[in-house]
Image 1 (spheres, helix red, strand yellow):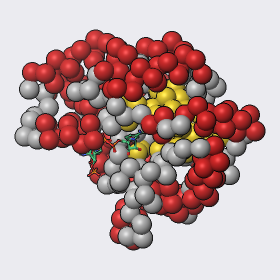
Image 2 (tube, rainbow, N blue to C red):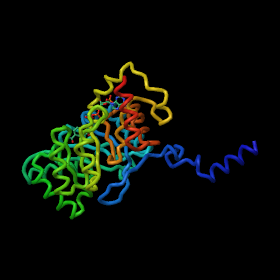
Image 3 (tube, rainbow, N blue to C red):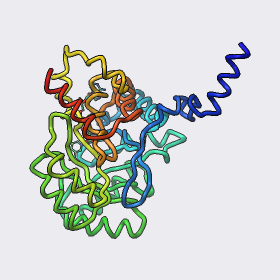
Image 4 (cartoon, rainbow, N blue to C red):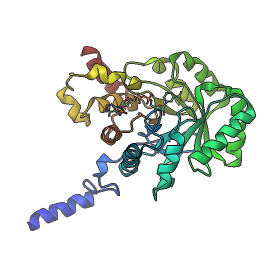
Length: 303
Ligand SMILES: NC(=O)c1ccc[n+]([C@@H]2O[C@H](COP(=O)([O-])OP(=O)(O)OC[C@H]3O[C@@H](n4cnc5c(N)ncnc54)[C@H](OP(=O)(O)O)[C@@H]3O)[C@@H](O)[C@H]2O)c1
């Protein structure tokens, strides 16, 4: 018994088994990536709110979403991505986070999705109210709608400290060229776009541009909107996946994305606790680089 205690003490000194505040061994702590424009570290796993947080006053769903948010915080995730386009999602995010003592620990991202300067200002002010934020961490121009007009407001608001970062978003491959042009010309802090193991257009057209220009990258639709799970149905993960802490197809798909060094954060959409935990675990024990991506892709293509 004494001998075991001594071994434990040595192990603790070596730091190998020390628990972090989230009660996971340190080697299981959330990977964080640098936001190039500030040097701030951002957890690589966040959450999207399209459809999943548009639950109005459904108390059962709100209860589960509260558990999702608590678990995300506990497991080291931070980014919550919303939009005025997502029905009641901004309001639900605001209601639920407002009841949590650690609400300031999340990284709040939303969007402007309208035409005209004043209309954009009004919409963004409403988002602050709905999400109950005095400052917004990230304000993005949704699908590039009237982007030149909103960009001027966002640059001013960043100067004034109303928002911490500004960005642009889209979800189609056809938009990648425009996103790349805006990155080169206007230096947004963030760019958000679609990228998944079966949707790799961004690899040749956008990820490198963002990396070279020091633009943080948020990936939306990492499961192709959920379509990848239809592909995975009845397929077994290869044994070797366990060596890379891949225990589900969700983790397989997310780890493919995170392996790209240009990716700062991924925001899979879910309102289910079990799925949120599954996804967040993909941010632990991350393997980076092309070789690993090639291995995952070869497996994907062979099944
Ligand atoms: N233009 C834009 O700015 C733009 C466009 C599209 C998306 N987005 C953002 O990106 C986020 C993500 O995109 P998305 O929600 O469209 O698609 P997605 O994340 O690729 O897929 C979401 C789907 O995957 C399922 N899912 C999630 N985790 C799972 C798991 N571990 N196991 C099994 N199924 C799982 C969800 O079902 P359950 O609910 O059952 O978990 C849902 O049906 C959005 O919520 C939004 O915030 C932005």
